[in-house]
Image (tube, rainbow, N blue to C red; front, side, top):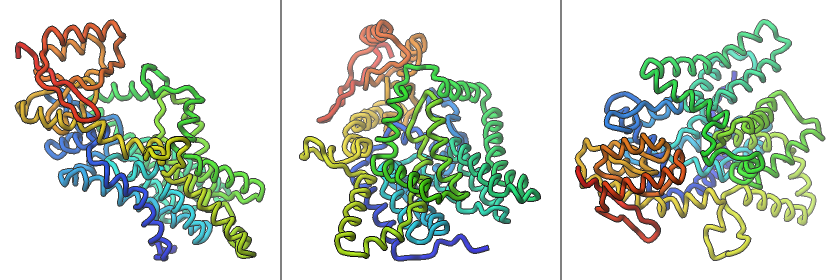
Length: 495
């Protein structure tokens, strides 16, 4: 058995450089934590203190079972080093993903296939967006790719592939679908080798199922009521219950989000060309059950889940990149380019156009003076708007840190996670809960932050009741503003 060590090649340095380059604007400009980052940093901090995965909601906290728990526990080992350090750990794992894609592509189709696959993934806009922030998707991808690189038929290392896939599931539960596709691949690849067939399938699939079961049992033992509530939310997310959530999208809206936000025009076009080319040239092989099967199945299944998040499909990016890298005959293209100078120019221009469209860069259709117009919309929002949007919440948190006791619970209408992170306080947030619960929380609130007036569970009449209650029982103590936004800090009159 050959070693899985990634051999050095000068082009690897080029890939790493370009992958870092597309992240560099985010590294330099985005300093303030966003909503989800604040959640994970909060849970990690509570793990450091108590060993339990708690969100600082209410005076005692609530268990965080929204996802499998390996990431917050892993984050807790280094989160105390600060936000910047925590983000760089994500970046290191993203580079690991790129190198693993190079290794799988090289093994399957040679050096050029590995180089193209890794390059496409490394500069892809959505991948870059999640490669430098405090979230678990990149870590999940890393171990999915470790598992993919270790699957070798009836190899004695198959059990290691199963372990790696199980670790991916423990980072995020959506990895279970990738494990299932790998099981199908093994089943088809070893169909004629019956003595090894079911043993190998079990080695690949069983660890992930066991990991998910152990996680569920552990959550149940810690808090049965919280675990049941989370399972009900998962079922609701799949069925569309609670359709006031903005992530419930019509099919045509979801197609737009997949093509524009997740894949981007360049990756979509390259992948479609690779699929057509492979079918016409009959270049499909056993590994394509994973490289082609996973993105097709994951995207199809996503239409049956009403609550839609592009990041839940992030696993399709490395598989699509690998399919592009391994299916197109790059040696034929290079041979055609060597025929004359014109061919070289044409190939270079086409390659640059595709790479440009895969990357976060975009040609502005209207106002070329607007920097936002030069970037993919999601990437541009994080780059230019993240700190503008969250800065007043950071300032509000710092104000409350100075004006509240360490054990005081603050209340925020909407983005409580960010305000509470900078305040280092426990918190309530109102925007997802019904009217009776909102009023009950306000009864015991001394400080209320009125940021974005968003109440997903209330109608306009109920929102007006909340406004009147706040007007009657609170006064404005401070208005926090900068050049982009303002929030109001209310203080209760009788507390």
